[in-house]
Length: 333
Ligand code: ADP
Ligand code: MG
Image 1 (cartoon, rainbow, N blue to C red):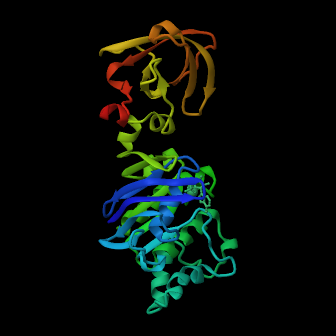
Image 2 (image 1 turned 30 degrees about the vertical axis):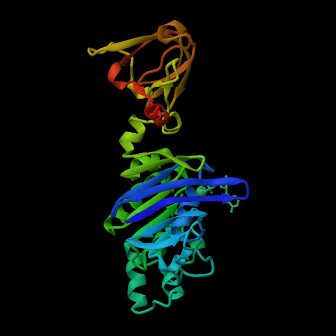
Image 3 (image 1 turned 120 degrees about the vertical axis):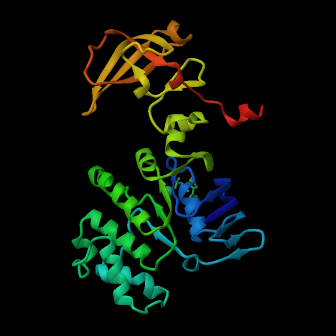
């Protein structure tokens, strides 16, 4: 559906995006996940046509919409995309109805305007609030107006740039599921930019992990979380406990407090700190150096009940839960 071939972008001395190739299949929900400054927005803006690329090409639905070599550039409004931004970008002086209608008016696509706008507003369950102004809506409702405005023109692809980060934590969690349901009920292909690991893992069926303008790994949420192929991916997607060799790691939830039946490794240490997380305790264990290699280091484990600081403990690791991070350079070496 979207084919991004070797695009790159440099701002003065900053390489915002290295040569990047991305393939997005029709009907998929792809999350672009990475820390601030990793090039996510640049990638999205080049696809949207809000930015030109220094090299490479973009095609959407089989049509080339930009090609640096031949200087081809289709403007954003003719790329058949809907966009949702972090700050919603609603017009404060326009009602909900007029905000949503704006997309159609701007393109002079006003046949059946009232019915189409009303339908989009009802899709996001804001029927009855057409006459309100953005300032009279909650954050979640404003988010839904922004979504309605993005889909009123019936795009086949929707691009979302950190659409939930302006909302508070609880609402953000509710909106994850709501947005995902809306996207799939409309049959849209979605590209969703976020720095939030949980958002990416819970919403997407494919995750692209970026750092320093480069896509380091792409795969299903399960793959990138459980089988990272790059140390950065392992560390960025969740807590990771590293062996002294720096190549093997295990996730905290895979550390067991009881000796498993299967082949395992036992690791001994001392409880350094205990934190209450609400649904469990987080236990920081200072590992005795000689049990897993030369270095003393701190590991995180989870537990249903607390333990005393200073207690000597044993953690068990089933061998199949140990991840060996083999980087692509090592594979090709
Ligand atoms: P992200 O969305 O992942 O936070 P961006 O794509 O916005 O990252 O930015 C990637 C890099 O490019 C950053 O170092 C950022 O400072 C730089 N950058 C982005 N836009 C511009 C711009 N218009 N001018 C100069 N530098 C920019
Ligand atoms: Mg950004």
